[in-house]
Amino acid sequence: MKAPGGGKNIRSDLNPARVVLLKIDDRDVTAREDETILQVARQNGIRIPTLCHLDGLSERGACRLCIVEIKGSPRLQPACITLARQDMEVITNSERVTRYRKKILELLFTERNHVCSVCVSNGHCELQALAMELGLTHVDYNYLY
Image (tube, rainbow, N blue to C red; front, side):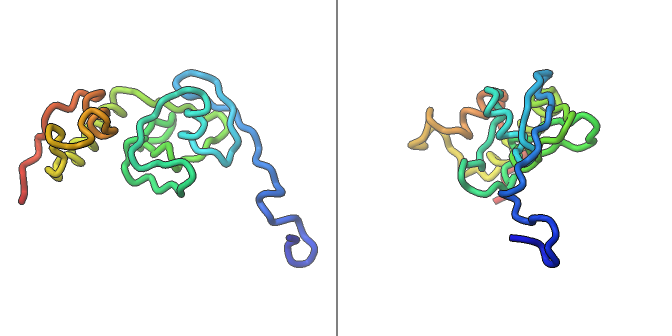
């Protein structure tokens, strides 16, 4: 489709995404600028945990477990909705990232409807596996209801 007045082509699928170079955990990787950090990490065998991301569905960044540090950014960013940029430097497992992921998991368990010992998914649960990986053994928040 042409822009009104015969201007440049405005269909994004006819304008291929530019390839960019970035670093993830000190590894040089390439990506299309329309790819997310999570997609690029997975393509390069770099694990970033997620709960809400399913390939083929639109990304929302809801669970926040895929947060990563980006050099120069004061805030942690969700890898599933943050696009790769030229010269971006991403850290996926710093002490800060791990601390925040653990706190997010703790908040999820605060709902108190996750009783692993009686759950049919016990031993095959992403939430339980992440809790074990991050060393979450108890919840510090009070039971509110």
